[in-house]
Image 1 (cartoon, rainbow, N blue to C red):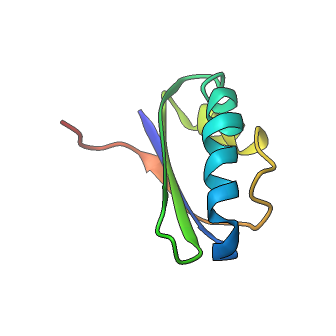
Image 2 (cartoon, rainbow, N blue to C red):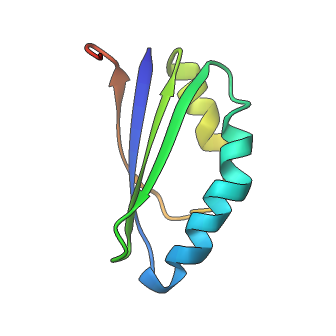
Length: 86
């Protein structure tokens, strides 16, 4: 199992538009990525958001990056194999 966390900064006035686009456009697309398991998006309401994706392996996580152009700002990324879970 492989996870990737992406941290974004954006104009907080765009929050509702971004949240809706991720829910309605991106999630259905990322679900088709090779090895997709889970995807979560959070928006703190102050111009920051983060996604958390879980895939079978790194290639699926890499594919998920190419599937979206919703957030054009380059995020901070933390990724790696999942070493523990419940």
